[in-house]
Image 1 (cartoon, one colour):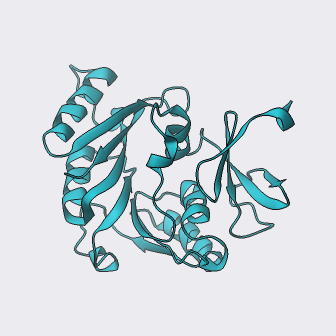
Image 2 (cartoon, one colour):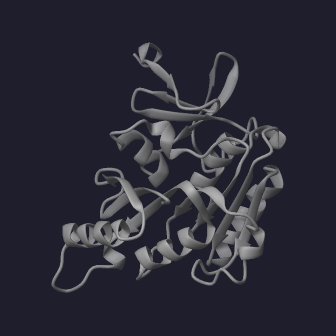
Length: 234
């Protein structure tokens, strides 16, 4: 039964219940993208669907302590390729909380105007979320939003040269010892003479030349043709 599943807190605002993840809703009563709302000990949580969020999938699939994949509450983080806001909203629950009681700051960059509209609407309800319309590769246009280096960076940009974009971003914005997560889409990198495994192996080798690779998480089953690379800045 669902009520008998063991509950494991990953942070003050993120809860693992069996193979489900939940975050304390920073905007009570409102579901962002139709997700389930449920109360644990009187506190409203939103279900964090790992089939719609690579970060959630990584939290469930990692062989290490999943809390290591989360940023510290109340800090400033950078998210490149923010999309329509599914992962962003749960990350905001963790990082900022209701009315930004934790004083976090989530800089969310995306190239698509439609995504920015969704993120801007979300930001009106969630203080601490800072959306920006921009190309992840052209940080001179949005880098002013991140004046100091951060301790956590996530990239989910489905375009060729994902590893190069990520390494440039980590060098510019990730502090020494900081954690970076790269969601790599194999189909965006695949060569005619290679396959998915080759793409991931090449990415691992390329990353290892510049940063410490902590884990390579295959997301097949949650998000096919995707892997999540967890790195630490040397």
